Amino acid sequence: MESDKIWTKDFIILLSSNFFVSLSFYLLMTSMAAYAIQEFQVSESKAGLAVSIFIIGALVSRLFSGKFIDVIGRKKMLFSGLILFLIGTISYLFVNNINFLMIGRFIHGLGFGISTTVIMTVNMASIPKSKRGEGIGYFSLSTAAGTAIGPFLALYLTHQFTYQTMFIYCIVFSAIALGSSVFLKIHEIDLTPEQKANIKKSFRFKDFYDKEALPVSLLMFISGIAYSGVISFINSYAMGMNLTKAASFFFVGYAIFLFVCRPIAGKLFDSKGENIVVYPSFAFFAISLFFITIANNGFILLLGGVFLAIGYGNIMSSMQTIIGKVTPPHRLGLAISTLFICMDAGSGTGPFVLGLIAEKFGFQTMYGVLAITVLFLIPFYYFVHGKKASAVKTL
Image 1 (cartoon, rainbow, N blue to C red):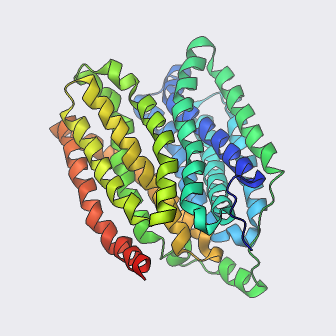
Image 2 (image 1 turned 45 degrees about the horizontal axis):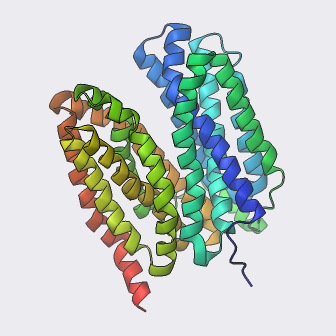
Image 3 (image 1 turned 135 degrees about the vertical axis):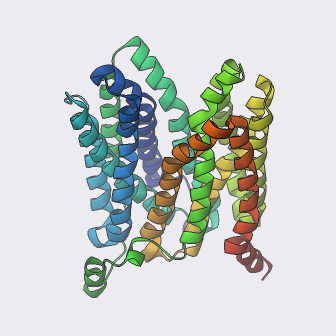
């Protein structure tokens, strides 16, 4: 009989590991461009590459970790990813030019991609099916906490101390994530020798993504582009609108409401089905972008942050839960990898594409276009999953 407990020892360890990995990731993402410019006197474009090459490393490793997770073994792959993540973090203490920094960032990204893919796969497999929405809602708060605390800690450490001190903090966080995983009890998927051989020798394009997870993952690709428009340009937009004080509290409000609404949305997901959460979440996401578009005072801009939490915040955890519902256990790693690849691709390409729109038409037009785009995701969701979920619920 399956236990209905969410807060098990393994769940807490996985949540903690994910928090420390996320904390280190967001801490460095916030400060890496400034570090490259100050330390190595490089151009802004090259500093931007030092930031984005991490995402490239993560994308590369996700392609292979999803395919080979159950061939190599989930625990072995988790240790490999966290060790690589720690090595990448340690490398920052020894870089003496921009090229070595790029290599270190790429290695760090490889470790991040492997470890986060495995952590999410193992966690999803361990949560009772009847409480997956609630469990993933709680679990995803560890990432949200990293999103809120990381940038704040980066600013504090770099202003009060040095970049070397910041790197030491990240090494400690990475070591805690690795050390805590020793105590995990991970359920492995037993593949036959024939199945393992087929996976190893098959390198067709379709072997690197999960077909069932792809439609939902494409929703997250587009949502990721829209969200990247907020995290990449909200400060620049606020400066032009003389709303910099409100912008400094934007993500604080986002994080607070995320912590409030995600557990509630998770319970609704489990008791009433995904549609009751997903449809309103896309609507709230569009409303948040609309508020940002028309913001002429701090209150409206902060409302945008609140609705962003209720909207995009719940979309992200809901799509992860849906992936778990539609995917058989032996393909869960590949499905999670497919979702993360699409999310990373959206977050990575979004700033460049949206920057071109903002440069030509202005930030208000850019946010208006994003609001309309997100509204169109509602019928898209209906056709790729919503109508099937509704049919299952009425049976």
